[in-house]
Amino acid sequence: MGGIEDAEPPLKRVKVPSGDLDKSLDNSSSTKPVFGSLGDSMARPLYSQGDGERIGSKGVIKKHEFVKIITRALYSLGYDRTGDLLQEESGIQLHPSAVSLFMQQVLDGKWDESLATLRSMVLDDESVAKSASFLILEQKFVELLKEGKIMDALHTLRTEIVPLSVKMGRVHELAASMISPSQTVVLGLSSQDNSIAISRSRFLEKLQKLLPAAVMIPERRLENLVEQALDMQRFNCVFHNTLDSELSLLSDHQCGRNQIPSQTLQTFEMQYPVEALTFDGRLDPKAFIDWVNEMEQFFEYHKLSDDRKVRFAKLKLISRAKFFWQNIEAQRRQPPTFDWSEMIEVLSSKYIPHSYQHKRNLEAMQKRRNQFVEVLAQIEKISNELYLDSEETPSSIAVDESDLSLRKLEELHSELRNLQQDKGDC
Image (cartoon, rainbow, N blue to C red):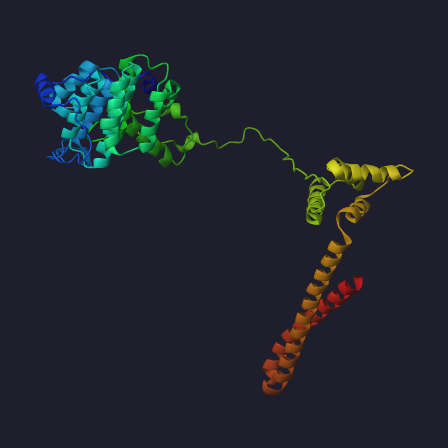
């Protein structure tokens, strides 16, 4: 499943019964456009084979599909004779004769014949048929252009591609390529596509991705199914601890408990660094306050002494803030002996305007005032309840409830004193 995909040769030439080939050549037209309704001549779908025989323990695998993807895998691996023999022995063809004929015509560059064969291959989605026709005519146009047959390419563009009325943006690119040869890069023509056979093989692979899987078996379908099965086994493995290279197709994958590490061999003690923010001296009070808070958390985490706090904080001042602090230190005649709280005070005087601080003080005072009013309201409410309970409630019950209310009153009075203390500090 690893290297086969990359080393896979181009699509092999398709064996077509001579009768089918002659019949197709007789009925084909060299210049007939492929537009209008592509379903006019449609009979029953070419690839409709019914459910047929089913295999597998659950009876969900269609035998003819299973044989087809095996045949496709054999051809992909280069086992052509084995693939031919499997088709002969099983009686199940990889592709219907019309599809094989179509593929051979594409490889031979018989574009008009391939379009006629495409119309005979009944497709449920007419838009897919139109898109496939567009790709074929585009390849025809490109090859004519490479051969220097400008007028033939122009005729194909005008009378066959344009009437399809699809991918008009691409049509404009094709037209531009006739005027400017450098525009051929837009068409996907690379220097390595000098061989017509290789170019057509790659084109057939591109065409194959567009057509339904029931018409043309996708490349590497069996490999994809096997990889999906391995992915599901790995997903369902509770104790999965195995390299993908050790997965096997010969048995279901299941890691045992013994594959999970259960003994401590070595202990590593790691200290994860806590990064500290820098402050660049921008005139944004909130940015400065956030920086101070982050530094406080950093100091707490690392348990720094006051002297080390200042030295470290200086390293986190950059740009204008760094120059400002250097000027502050230079203004002192003696070596500066700031502590962290003094450093905050000096920086705050620079980066927290009085108006901002005044606003914050007013907001704090309003908040305390609201709390003060709320506490007073609760005290008044509980006092009224105590008074009413003392008159209406029997004494045996009132004593317990009044004790609770009194304790609550005491807590509220304590909170009130704290608020008054905070107000005095301001």
